[in-house]
Image (cartoon, rainbow over all chains, first blue to last red; front, side, top):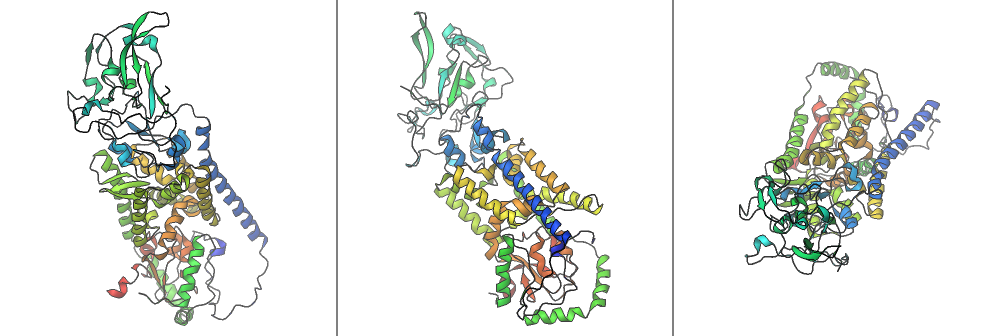
Length: 300
Length: 328
């Protein structure tokens, strides 16, 4: 019971006489013993050790930023990366409201970004099936915003020319999405493998039976997203990226000139693209032919 | 309201200084009433010995600890279940959440974000204000022992540590408590200067809370490292010497009406309370001859965990709501 030693300087002064309320005389303290001095020195060393450990751990968060391998696609309405990292309180409320659970939280390898939300579009893209960018509504600190506050600049080409029209709500009174900036831009990175360019069709489950990604299909249920695997396709000429793109006018199949001068069909991304990543998720080719470049801007 | 005499006023200020890291010192002035009791106790050694013996056979209570663990676990599971079963009672994590729609934002996290981002939106103010008032009423560091999930893990780690100490396999390596104040300042300055919420990336409170809700991750390794440090090296090191969250809530608790109250009269100065306490410097007043008044509120660094209340064989330490006991 009494084995639990108290620090020497805090030991109960049971034998000491009760202090009086009178003024204490000039300090007549004996000089501290050698042992006492050594204890104090060791404590200073331990304090430095713990300080070093905590600060080292804290500042190691810089490393992943310095050696950033790839940019994270942030949820819609995210501020520019630096501002995003400083304002995100890492609570995950955006994760909780997303009907397709497109938003995940970053881990330790993201350094200061640990606990911040990101979207891995190939695994689960944001298909705007919430109709209202609810993640922005849920954000308590303004890391995700419908419109940036005036003092934060908008990067050239990040601003959308017009509020994106959601194909799913096209017939509604208010068909637009409350979003003023894009989070990225889709880009055809592997045209040589693209089924549309090759003039091929697609039959079956895109991404296979085991794929967990979900999407809202208006012809199935407007309010309940289903697994992509539960919605097989049979298309004569592949246009999945265009067909499933949730934003009106963001991508289309156009006749373009190939490098050799011949005409061919190809998916072409247009200015309204917000960078949601549905095209990246739905592309049936492995690896995907089309990807969303996170934080990319529209270059005319 | 309670009459606060000059002795208590002085102690109140002393305890604030102690919270920021000063060593607890012997008081220079003691009220006449308390001096009478101190004097009387000096001549009663035999009675004390007798009571000590009786105490050794007393059954140890865990009333407040059990209540606290229940509250802590339920609070954290409410977050988890709100997400898992989509019942939307308490959405978010400990850093920021919504309780049936009302914003709640952890004060230290909010501070980090405000300093780093230098822009404060309305929801942030509402959430921070709500939490500030909540913990002002409930005792400030009450957050630490009644809500923080790291506190519970650290309590279990502490049991292992104390067991090893008892077996004489190691001794507790205490550290300078001023480090916590330093770490508070350093992390505030870092947030302001770098624009990153540096502390949030290593806060075990946030890491564990998110792990409980959104699933475990590598970040838990840092929490594990802290626990290992506490088990084998320094007892409760993170909460005692490093965590700025504790200091933030400690400051909030300075004027809190909910606290532990010490009554000098029946105390046998056995010191069991100081052995179980996370912050024994707040209990310096129970050392024989140190109480400056007959009834003393314990300082703001106290987490109101109730371990001392459970341990005290004489009921000299009790939960108390300022003013309420007078009313009743």
